[in-house]
Amino acid sequence: MNIAEGLTLSPQDVIGESIAVLGIKGSGKTNTSAVVIEELAELGIPVTIVDPEGEYYGLKERYEFLIAGRGKSAEIQLEPEQAGALAQFSLQQAVSVILDMSNYDEETGQRLLLSYLESLFEAASELRKPYFLVIEEAHEYMPERSASPLRALLKRLALRGRKRGIGIIIVNQRSSNIAKDILTQAGIMLLHRVAHSADMTIYKDLIPVLTAKEVAEAVRGLSPGQCIYVRGDCVKVVQIRKRHTFHAGATPGLHDTPKLRRIDAKLLRQLQKAMGDPAAASRSAAPGGCGSINVAAEKDEIIRRLKDQVATLTNEIENYRRENVRLKAQQPTTKIEKLVAGREQKAPGIARQRQEEKLGKLLEFLGKGRRLNRIILAHFLQHNSPTTIRQLARKLAVDENNLYKNQPLELVRLGLLQRDDAESVNKRYQLGDIQALFPDLNSKQVCERILSSCLEGI
Ligand SMILES: Nc1ncnc2c1ncn2[C@@H]1O[C@H](COP(=O)(O)OP(=O)(O)OP(=O)(O)O)[C@@H](O)[C@H]1O
Ligand SMILES: [Mg+2]
View: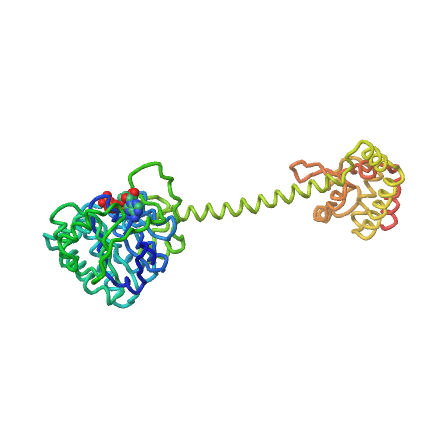
């Protein structure tokens, strides 16, 4: 694990361990704790961070963390009643969670955390997988002076969590404010600068291998990010590396807004189910609905799908464009080429020959087609005037119903007949534009040839 230069820590050294990160404001505690979390994330060890100030979301720049809490920044809206289910899900599915405590009042926050940690402890008894709990501003939950169910539970976790694979990272400004019986459980300590004499006294107790004077000297010389590393008899001053991910707790400046990873939408739906809220799927459309999954992750999924579609369409457009360019390249471009091509098109021989072929095919087609169509076409070739089906039936002496059922639509499709588009059932038919069909042939001769072909087959 790469935490500080010259400090070798293996996963076995930290799994199930209690780690205390102490020091005054600005001494580098949050950075240090985030560095340890980054290393745990690299090892695939899930973590729950109790984050009272919303300082840890920057971890999502690189790692998949689910932010649970109240308010806009939470990916899942969380109330105390659902905390237990979330804790179990986090442990069983190895999903890291940031509990954003910034929008709960003290009583609700404590209730939520108690329920969360009870479930975590219980589930860990069965699962026994490496897991870490990080508690920022720990004195709020484990004050030195007052007893509470939460404090008792945290003590239990610090004492008995190891066997269950649960390690705990306690982050606090004032070592003297935090329950000593919990602090003394810490197997690893990262002691940043302190100034208050009460805190210095605690440090002296925590580093028994150094004299009081040595401790005071070492502490005074610490700059931000430097700390005294204590593990058993091993004591040394180390410079913790800077975290790789965005530090939201840093003094505001001209930082770039980080690009954060969104938790997988499928996983969110699973969690929603685990939290026993099947109706939440529909409610999730309303942002901020209690118990509802924040729609942002699903929106991301939709955006991703739309982006895919845009990419496909862009590809297709590009293909069309290329095809267009290719076809244009085949067309004559110079004046001479156009002239030649024009002559070619107009060359009576070629055009007429093609239309002759077309007429031949048409006659063949008519010959093989329905006899009724040949009778109708022959009629119009001889008496061309707009005629309804009823009139046509009378003129041709055929059954009107039969003609309605077998209208000469095939002839219309071929352009040999035209049908007006009146709305009524009495649509009128007439001969098509034979001249337009065979512009280079003599249309009178064409009509005669079609007529004789029709009459032949009647
Ligand atoms: N390891 C480090 N290397 C270099 N700079 C650091 C390091 N750790 C912290 N710093 C600097 O110190 C500042 C304060 O760090 P950090 O926010 O971690 O302190 P903190 O002890 O958590 O403060 P607070 O009590 O206000 O939350 C950081 O913004 C950063 O500029
Ligand atoms: Mg901090």
